[in-house]
Length: 52
Image (cartoon, rainbow, N blue to C red; front, side, top):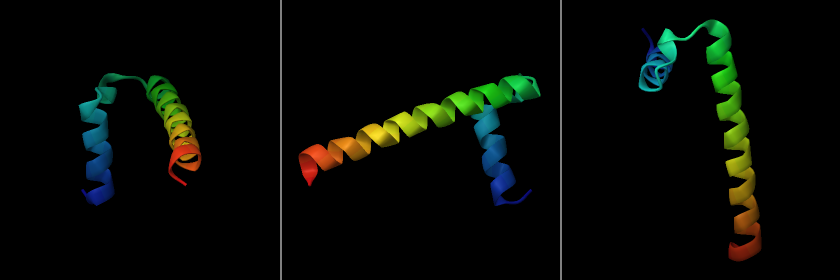
């Protein structure tokens, strides 16, 4: 196991994704990516508005 495979394994075990089907894992990952995009967008707007 290399470093990347270990991180993927840790992610799957931490969130319980190892017991889901492939399409459920894919759906969960898509939702996580969308939420991360919203958070990143909010943080950048916050910094543009209040910090700079």
